[in-house]
Amino acid sequence: MASQRDTSTICVFDVDGTLTEPRLKIQPDMEEFLQKLKSKVDVALVGGSDLVKIEEQMQDPKSNESVTKKFNYVFSENGLVAYHNGEKVGQEDLLNYAGEEKLQKVINFAMKYMSDIKLPAKRGTFFEFRSSMINICPVGRSCSQKERLEFAAYDKEHKMREKFQTALREAFPDDGLVFAIGGQISIDVYPVGWDKTFCLKFIEKGNYKTIHFFGDKTDPGGNDHEIYSDPRTIGHKVANPKDTIKQVSELFFKD
Ligand code: M1P
Image (cartoon, rainbow, N blue to C red; front, side):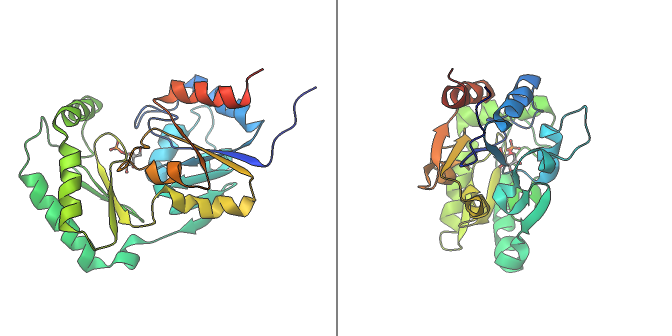
């Protein structure tokens, strides 16, 4: 007999590095695995990226169905833009919240800082102003995949983003802003509390007994850290999408 769905449990997944390689599309084995998991428990996605990017990465090429309809919850920009069963249930506005003056100071500081560093490549779109965060990208978001990987390797060796993050934190210690290293090439800036734990206020309405969270950037300073260590979740650190499948299988498909 097929085992019953457990409606008291939800699995919440980060996207980049957890369900997909950073900024790349979901692989068929992961697509199939998530389908199987959905038959057991509720499933939510929480990404730092905006919804356009999450759609690009998570959409099944065979169907045009929005990713927001495929999962119980889809949270982009850490949950500041929130969907429940395909319906938008929340959206915050950074500009309104933080104000032009504060944000412009950060942008001006970051422009100066980035103009003084030398990198293997600099391309275009160094800032992406999203509805709930500013994404700052020293190599430029319009870099090619090859340039992205080159920057990531250079950053690993020279700690470019960590140094930039420290400089930002030192320059804006009391402004109520978080500077988080989310993906491979950028830093996210958002108000304190607008991290991935923000999505839990929507999930809590579902009265789940158990909330599992899976993410790769779980260390302090990473954008999965707060939700991973939040007492409301059981946090799981994963190394990559393959490891996610392995760890989730151990929890839900043991026999
Ligand atoms: O993994 C989430 C991050 O994805 C992108 O990061 P990057 O382009 O640096 O790999 C960005 O959308 C970032 O905002 C987001 O946190």
